[in-house]
Image 1 (cartoon, rainbow, N blue to C red):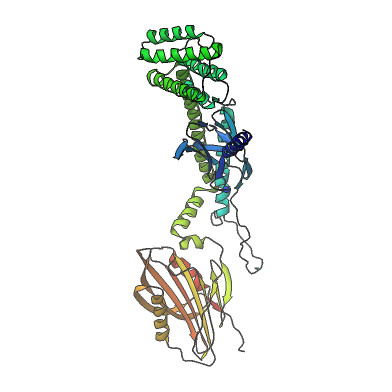
Image 2 (image 1 turned 180 degrees about the vertical axis):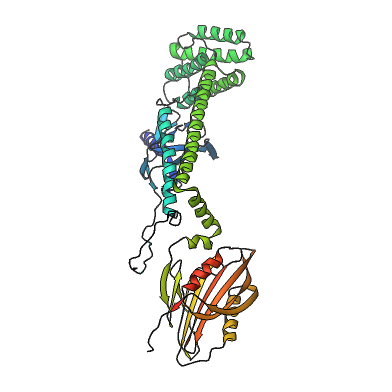
Length: 531
């Protein structure tokens, strides 16, 4: 006997531990407005009923979507799964609190988890450094010095729009929140079977049959809507027959007789103290469940269940209405604020920004900016460009070359690009202009240029610097599209060195000529004594 009690104690402890709620989130760190999925899981026996909370928010996280409960039957157990999509629009660390899950009438709780919501980081450390310039007299020209829209400005503008829309959304959310939690409703049928599962067949027969008849009476009191709990067996059977007859339910006399027989046996046990063994008690419990099933399959939905269903439907419709109002307010506010941000920065600035992001920047864009003057290579060549040129590593096996250097800005496949190369010879060399032209064409072809057409002419800029020009057109294939490009290469040479500047641009760029003139008119060799 002691061993049996010990076994039962260990078994009950094991079952108690088994009834836990597995808790998991898809991510533990998200950005503002990003969604995570919270998953609750529990395994119970097949007859147990599980009810998950239906909430609009969990802690300070908004419930974006609550998914229907899933059931997976595995052997003699059922795995219940509930998922929620959550989000938050303010940065910080938020706690997902323990959630109450009802298994039959027992409350169990999920685990507490922390979720970090991060803001979008803006990198302000990358700033190019330029040479210090001398003082310069500047004439203010509002149109010419129109401020260019930066990524940071656009991000802050969009963040302001989203924050304002989100603030209004949450103000409405707080006002419309239903402060009273909806109670979990359990139907008379489900309640009856929960009670059947809790019946203790090891208790004395009198207690067992008292509980058994109370379960049946409570079921009929709720479904057939007559007072049953305080009725004697004779009164209960009379009211049951009358209700079935008045409401014209298709219940056989044999079923009513089974109930009457069961209640008569219960009275004998309670008052005459007859002995009933455990197998017979279990048989009567199963018979009672079958009787409830017979009535459940025949009776219509009770008034109580109809009222609860209608109330729940009305609450859901109200919540949906409030949610639609909040979402509409968020979208309208976001659009209105975004339009205000666009007008604040200027329509032209915004369109130029997106045009440059999508299509790249043409000559007209750079002509409006402040340019930079720098000197490169050996022999030294001074040039004015929109950005500082970047050194490109090049080598030469020619024994006559003393120094070779190359610099570039953007790629030849971009809308605009500049390449500068200087070559210094150890001794005097006779420059072959045709060979320079051929080398230039060879370099273009190495860059996947095709169908090259050229013309050559003499060059002289406003600083009286003279040289030769090779210019023309070529085609290049990029992302399965063929672009028609033009190139303009200036050669400045003498017997001690060569300086070459190449500008490539899209053939359709109408402002490219002004761009080329500005670059080439700035060219100026810097005298340097021979080493």
